[in-house]
Amino acid sequence: MFDTVIQGGTIYAPNNTFVGDIGIVGDTIGDIKEGGGLKGDKIIDATGKCVFPGFIDPHVHIHLPFMGTNAIDDHESATKAALVGGTTTIIEMICPGPDDEPANAFNEWKTLAEEGCCCDFTFHLAVVRFDALAQKQLRELVAEEGVQSFKIFLAYKGALDISDDDLLELMKMCKELGVTLTAHCENAEAVDSMQRKFLAEGKNGPEWHEPSRPRSVEADGVNHLCSFAELTGATIYIVHTSCGIAVDRAIEASGRGVDVTVEAVAPHLVLDKSYAERDDFEGAKFVMSPPLRDEVEHDALWRSLASGAVSTIGTDHAPFNFHGQKDMGREAFTLIPNGIPSIQERVDLVHTYGVCTGNIEMQTMVDACSTNVAKQFNMYPRKGAIQVGSDADIVVYDANFVGTFKHVDGLSKVDYSGFEGMERKGRSDVVLLRGKVVAEQGVFTGECAGGKYIPRK
Ligand code: URP
Ligand code: ZN
Ligand code: ZN
Image (tube, rainbow, N blue to C red; front, side, top):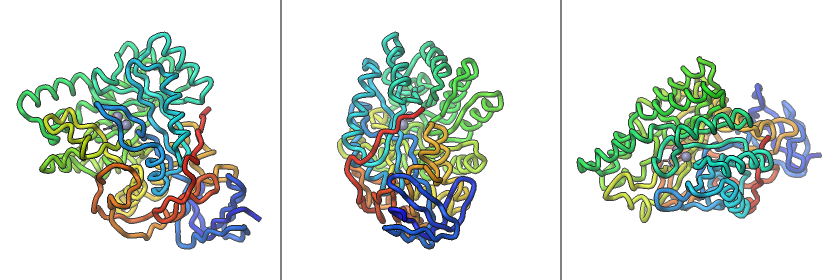
């Protein structure tokens, strides 16, 4: 007799999809039976539904002091939104300022997350200083706190970027410690120069954001990072890749033996740069970096997902209100806080515009939004798999649900939705976190601050 049995759904287990039952004991999966027949104290009927491993978002910002303001969510609001959208684990970016010590930053972010996170969580730690003290602390955080991935920004000149000198040494350290280096790839110098040029010409609206950081600037950043990885042997992970030529640079590097993984994020897969060109400063809602591109890049990204050249999908959730935050940039697009929130919508967007359109298989969605993330960031098979012994993080998914994306359904604190009115197919019907039901049909039913830190080895 199990505590809970998820009965009669189509189960996406590693390398196998079948109709059956899942038996849960405490917080883990105790048995999986093709054809069914398991008995439990509590039964969740999944007939006609898909049963997925809990989704994992590899790229989330919650506590984010950035561009003169702070992202608007707290850990409670962001992770409630994550859970109703089927995401049971997040990897948040710790983004300290250039003077902050890494150990203090880690403690600050971890304390906030422990106080507020309703889903499980772990971190990528941004390296914005690399002096002797920072190096010592980074080593300690890897050895003692289960940090397994760092983050660098080849962007945001003068705020978060890092010199080539430091980057090379950091990559040697990553190689030595077996840590993955995640990276925002653009050419910060080129962006800075083009931004100044456009502003001097009076081109100050949000529609100038994309032209100030075109695809070639991103491809150059990817190439730069890959070259350094080739020199050092470091494992690299390129976040929020927005266009085909950036993916191509990574594929070429992989052909030369570079250990590189490429991430896409939900906004780049479904929104294009015309959104940032909307009148009355509406376009500011759609300013993120790298920017939204031409629609043709959607196809390039979906094709790359189908081929495996892009292997994960995150959100880059970075919520800034339109009123009071985005509008700080009315006089200059360079002052619009960058970010398009999607922590709640990610899986349904990928299902609607990836799976239902035939761009990718359902299994590719599961891999990119869960399994591959768990494998890449050393959480597998505790997370990212429906298999005996794994955490019972499970999503019973109604692939037949039809609706529209609406801001009023969102649990994030942000005051708009970038996907308002867009067609939606699919919904997380029941979401379980370590065996407990935490969300049902768009309503959070879990425990506040019920999330756990997932240290990684
Ligand atoms: O526009 C973005 N991506 N905002 C969040 C910060 C970052 O670059 O990831
Ligand atoms: Zn970034
Ligand atoms: Zn980001």
